[in-house]
Length: 276
Image 1 (cartoon, rainbow, N blue to C red):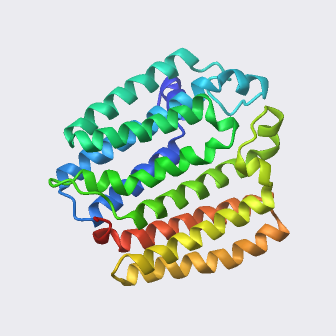
Image 2 (cartoon, rainbow, N blue to C red):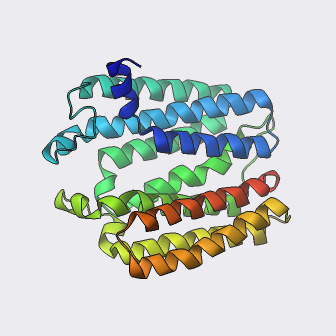
Image 3 (tube, rainbow, N blue to C red):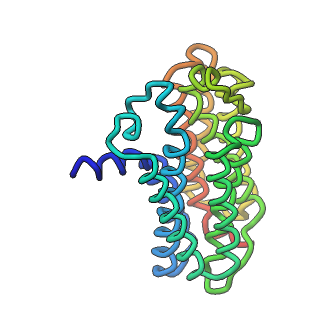
């Protein structure tokens, strides 16, 4: 891969981008959405996440230079912040165009999710609203799936709440490794104010509650749901030990991510019940 393409890919936050896209595609498929709609929804989500990822690196480029973030392609001079921002805008346009193919209701909800990501990057990541941006972005995934149907329907409220809890945990896990560096740059979102130990515990408990909510509210119980919920509760127990013993470790971050994956498994098992 040419160096410029590597730099562009490296500025896109490909890990989270692919995770969110995969979650959306898996849930949409499990909810028995038509194949072409799953493909369009997946492409829309990919463009959405690329736009948010690229805009994050472009907007943060000055701060990243001050922090000597040599892991960032823009800081290394491999690609300009203007190029990355242009790509972010283009990806946003593509995402919006794809959302319109699935109907006006989905297009509006998608626009809200996209705006939440951009607002987080541009301004809200420094304050208490940062967690809300994540909760909105993840909470709207079930709603976008049900609105992508040939007969658009609202999503069950419990599925939106489960998505929101996933978003909360994702935000807390995302900032845990960088708490100290973020505080030096004036970022004081909810996990920064709570500290590593409390933030880790809150994320784990939110995920456990999300799994329990899915199992008790879906109206169906499948083996996949039970496997996901059981795994989440086991990881909660192990994670709480890590919270008290190693609150600043990568182990806690990994446990939260595994618990989040378990919640996704639970939600996938209940995907046919997310339509209200």
